[in-house]
Image (cartoon, rainbow, N blue to C red; front, side, top):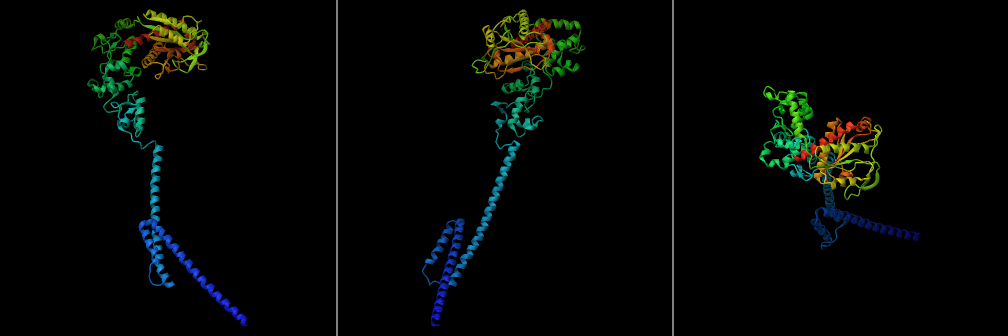
Length: 536
């Protein structure tokens, strides 16, 4: 029993020691935990308050090392530690509030950024940009200023320009490309119709090429009072033309009175005083129409004898004398083609066959090269009768002359113009008919601007004159840069497509000698008009 009691006492002591050790361990863990909480709270505070928090933390850390009374009882220590815990809680709440404010600020900023991005996306979708455009940019297109004939605000206030509001670059581009051709007024100080009505010398020069009136005023007109006075306010044609070629018709014709009596003329001639006078001479006089009020102007009585006398005078005085001028005629193609290649222009890397044999008429049973030469010989005869010197690139079918060589023949002869005679053919398009011409494109890299412009004008006059003589349909002219014979010629050159050999009716007519003669006369008239315009 004694031994048992001893062991029981040992067990009790052991249990007490373990309890004491556990108590101390628990107290140490609790203190460490408190230290961690306080340290963490102060660290947060340090981030928020900067150096002030650091100083406070340093002071608190120094407190335990200060000399003073003995270590207080656990209850006292716990009481002292309560305050930091409360402060920590307050700081935590404060930090949470700050975090909430920061989050709110971030949300607000994010919302603003989102709004900006959304606004930017909307602008992109609508075509609007925040790019600032200077006032000069609103009236400048491809480096050319239109300051005196165009104002962005005025143009976009008109019905034809409203769709370009907010789009200054598109507005000026549309004005230059189409607005000038349609006589759209684009500034309060310049009305293209008024300017055209008020300047007869410009009408003589530009006719219905309306864009030229804008360009003239922009470049020259705005500088001089004699032009500025007609920039706005003129509603009636000033000094309409009454002279047809060299014959004065004032005694029997007045622009206003003729249009008043025959308003239908406006549908065909428009308000072009030259076209209206031409209508009177070519149609009105033949139909016996009065060009003036016979009561006010007795001499204007539309007697057939008066008109016949004037028509004879017009024909006699307006016939052109081609003396001293050289025309090169190129009858297109030849009996056998040469399909090896040559450069389409000086220095070009692109090539085409040197010359082909051309089309074949299924209905006329004739080759194109035959018809081309037949018409060319008739044209040669007609031009010689009018005083021209004529150079032919070929007079037979059995030749071998490339397109470059044909142009060189004209160059060597110092020809003033070159007219190339062809007929068109499009498989499966038997309904197509009419006459049209080819000429160099405006951006042709092989020719000067002067030669290009004159070549295009020659093409228009040749087409119109042939159509007037043969009563054919006027097709649209084509301006291209891949025509070898045009690119190598040093003078204005045009290719005449006299008609369509793929059209049954036109094919047969092209092979007819009488129709060929009309073609030759019409082309000769076109050549006369071309040189008449140059002399003016």
